Length: 308
Image (tube, rainbow, N blue to C red; front, side, top):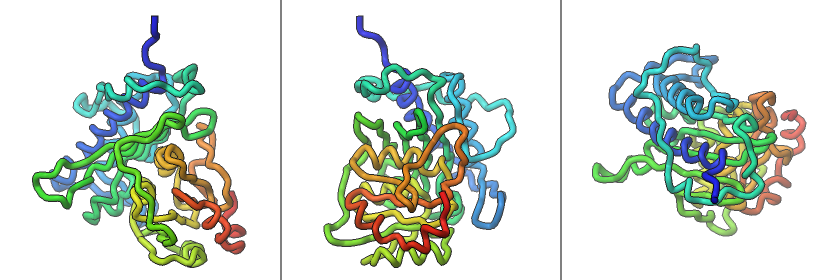
């Protein structure tokens, strides 16, 4: 008799539905008009009511179904009773129909670490740059990012009142990536996507060393990886310690599942064990194609300044 879906595929199917619920919460907070903005460490490090509600929704929904998971979220929230309407207990049936890659079939719940960014691109969210915003749920096993879900709550928001708002992209290594149309950036063009609100001299020096034809400055790590897989940018270059593991875990899987590569600025793979430091202190370099071209152009001065 065939056994049911594996732990990993059940988790991904649940996380997909949970991410869709998160997207609805993000849109609802905007429509209600009170973002409830607080500064965390500085004027560019913000938290909104949506960050708080979405993290509660994602973490509480996951824990109910998968109590042995390790879940690490961006927002530090006191434990509290969660409103039942924040709980999502559905799962995306299409995902359950897909085969689990052989190397992940025996994974147990307690072997997995889930990295959650409830609202990636918070500053842009507060400024109305809604297409920069994503919800990120990344799943790691033995320190490696192996499955990821990205919800874009405002995908299509400029396409008119009839357009369906939002989409969810997902991937499992060894299975593939779904929910978007893969497109490569124009051949021979070096279009760099980098930070909009966390710039520095190091960031500028590294971007200029790539000899870019164009530079896109946008918010959100999830948004930048989507730019790579949809052909709007050739490389995501961020020579700064500002990015965290919950920013990169889910997007990295989407990129790797279509043959791209994400590392720190030195070319090291990122680690996602539960005990790892949260900061990606040696920055991020992510490319869909021609990784070696961009890696070879990272200045030595930048490498020396960013210690893994």
